[in-house]
Image 1: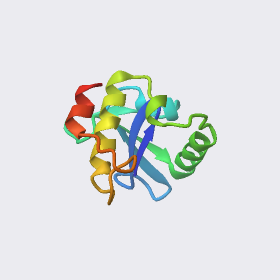
Image 2: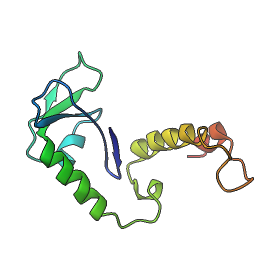
Image 3: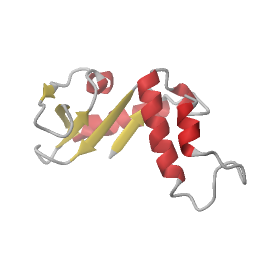
Image 4: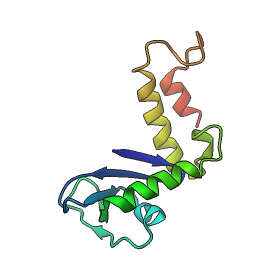
Length: 119
């Protein structure tokens, strides 16, 4: 599961952990701690995701639910203050647009590369 929050990106999987735990992974230092401040984060450059922590499943479920309860924005992309994270999320958004059967905003087509260059 990919979790894209306004201040961090997490990948959460059932790998290398016990049955009551999940592996929380991140590409950027500090992202895991933003959601799980007590997690023991390990840095391993031999893995796909540089940062990882084993977290109890219940804690993951509670943290994701709490994040949903705290939503106070009307546009997710505009809630992302970090420029690099915003840019990465825009690339994901543009790729996901290609899955949509018709372009967003009705007939108005936003050229993906031109849109990104304007950021």
